Image (cartoon, rainbow, N blue to C red; front, side, top):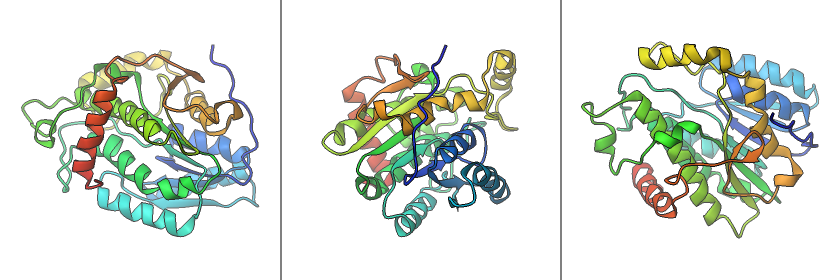
Length: 292
């Protein structure tokens, strides 16, 4: 059984969470607000964002502000605008939780030329995290947490955008698994690059969570598998526990480059642990985001 997260005093800490309007992101925000953190909620839908703000504000209490920033993370120009706004408002970030993610449907290529789940689940994370490093560096000890998944075991990193966007080879399941592998490889390489700083980077498998990840565009096979697994799924509150733990527990303040499950470092695939693959992904990501 998973252990309960340490209840830590987060007063004076600023925490930014993407995908915070519902599911694991909202559950994470609520708990960190109860621990005293100042929350910055990044949401896509304005109506859901306001509901989330009210929910988190209730948990935080009237004296702690809860901020909302709207952003569609599927477009990198929006991510850059978001990062600039964060830099303008917050001189320091103590915790960045890259929580947002989608389960893809039929092949969708954005107007910037990226497959939808690849850009939303990985390239936006790569871009936002790198752009916010100055604010994270300003904290005495900052933490970066990225949500991954056991689906990474089936993933691989395509060498080119063309291969990723090929309608003859595209599979929604494969696209999702690839993006989750990228989350772990990115975290490992980031931790290596930040090892002489006060910033840690870890990733999380939240468990099989009934988080509303399915959508009308999700392929029938994936929906069928999802609904068959529903009786075995955990709540969003339980799914948020490892993110909360990594964001707040004193005992993990210096741990970096790990893949956590149930509040403990867990086993990931051999490919996910490959330094060569992590370095290759970083180069691909730089090229595709223009972040070289």
